[in-house]
Length: 48
Image (cartoon, rainbow, N blue to C red; front, side, top):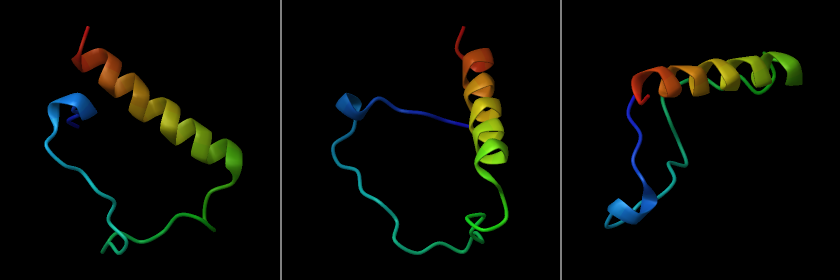
């Protein structure tokens, strides 16, 4: 997992299509919040 500050990027954009399947109808709001919390915790551990 890598992250970058927007101020350090020359340009950035959004990917409209991806090969990763959507989880929009597979996770309820609480499950999605749990996944986001988990990902944030990984970033915190790698950048103390």
